[in-house]
Image 1 (spheres, rainbow, N blue to C red):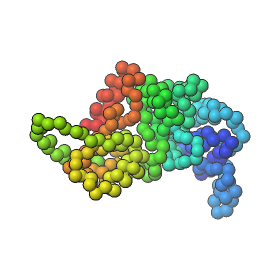
Image 2: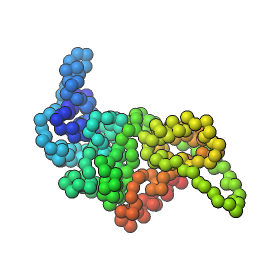
Image 3: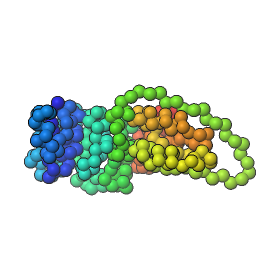
Length: 277
C-alpha cells in the first residue's frame, strides 16, 4: 500500500485521489501528512503525486476519465464536494467508483460529465453522493436514465454495506374498515436520503416518546437493503403497528422522472417494481 498525494491548490485532485485509491489500493494523503506517513513507523511510499500536475478541474477530470474510468465500476458514479469531508469516501474507494464534482447545468461541465454517463447503462447504475445544483443536475442526469442517491454524508458505508443480512419485515397489520369521514395521511419525507436515515430520522425515531401513538408513514431508501441492512432491520424491529416504512415516490432513487425517455422510464418502473416486491 502506498500514498496518492492531493494538491491543495487544486481541490478536485481529492476526487481524483479517491478514484485512484480504489483502483490501485492506495491511501489518500493530504500533503500536510506526508512527513508523518513517509517516516517511521509507517514508512509509506508515494505512489502517485498529484501536486503541480493540473491547472484546472477539467484537466483533473479529463485525466481521471482517460486513465482510470475504464477500471472503475460503471454501476456507480459519485458526486462529491471537494471541501474535504469524507463521510462517503471509504465506500467510494471500496466499490471502485469514480468521484467527480461538476454541474450538469453548466455546458462545459456537462460535456465533461457526459463522457462518464454515456458509458453507464440506463437503469443499470446510480449517481451516489450529491450534486452541485439540485435543480439543473437532477434534470440533466435524468436524461441518462440514472437515479440519484443522496449519500455524501453517509457514514461507514464500506462497513455497513459490507455485511449480508436478511431483511426481517413484520407482517402488515390489517387495514381498518373505511368510514364515511375525512382521512389525513401524515408522511415524513427525506427518508429516501440514506444519510437522513442514519442521522435525523434516527433522532426523530428514538427521541419522541409519542411515536407510535398515531399512524405515520416514514419514507425510507429501499437501497438500504444493500447499503446498511442492519439499520433497516433496526427500524423494522422497533416499529410499532402505527409506523409504516415507505419508498419515496420515485422508487429506489431520487429523480425527475418527467425528464426520462419513455424506454428508460418503462425499464425503471419494471425494475423497481421487481426489486420492491
